[in-house]
Length: 228
Image (cartoon, rainbow, N blue to C red; front, side):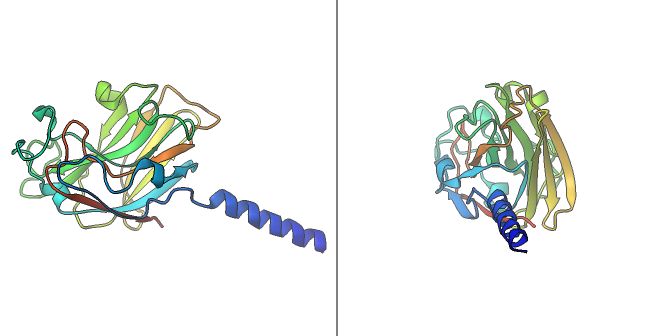
């Protein structure tokens, strides 16, 4: 009986350690006007070793309405990129010390309130998401056909949605947009050429960021919370 008790205690300890979250992204974060970074960085967002993980997000109304036209009021190195995607949530791949500009998976976002957005619904102010992956140093914008997959489903602001990311040892990463209860709305996939089978699921968590060619033309906010 004593041996069974000890085994049960050890089993509980192992399960608690393996399931404990290493990242601490929960909270509301803001990128201020004319900045790239929010008030929390990749270092303090922590690490994650889950093969399937999720987060619930809610974006502020300004993420659908920010005005890019007056580039004299904020810094934009190339105005042709004013409707570029911005970083939302994800992590690097292939180890905690591995650079996210080498191998990573992230959800990204941009305003979708006029015909400059290919998923625009007339008369609405919404946000478009995309799956956005680096693969062996190749950037998503260098190979958008394979490494950047846009969602046709746009989202409302000030409303909760769940983002679900799954990685496997073949290098396949699956990005799912779901409602707040976890019901899938749309899924996109990216196939990596670098599989790193021993540690593909280990990475540094990435969060709220605007740009990088252009800085934020006004304050934009996101709230992260634990998924179901």
